[in-house]
Image 1: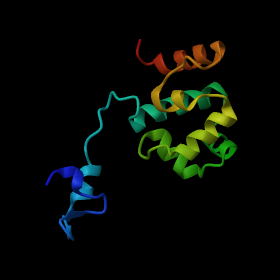
Image 2 (image 1 turned 45 degrees about the vertical axis):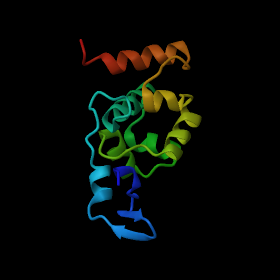
Image 3 (image 1 turned 180 degrees about the vertical axis):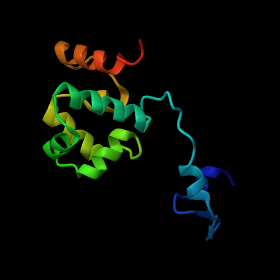
Length: 127
């Protein structure tokens, strides 16, 4: 049996029977994420913060503008909670950024002034 035969709920199938594999789902979900990955929640949070600051909004106003609970948005921007696809879609539609920017950091599909502003904001601490 290989690890791919273990379902997310901790069960695995062997012949005609289901068995419980304790902590299987927990072990799979706790794999450490590369801190330099663009998909890392902290990286996504930095991009959200840059977008919010570009529009001169505080966290409450930004979260309200896209219909996200304020406390959830704060956790997302801090990198403590992943950004769900439906939330990313609402942000991209409301503020004119691509989901590719939110999740991967790609600036190529953004208008040049917005891309320049976001790039300056994202790299201000790197100098």
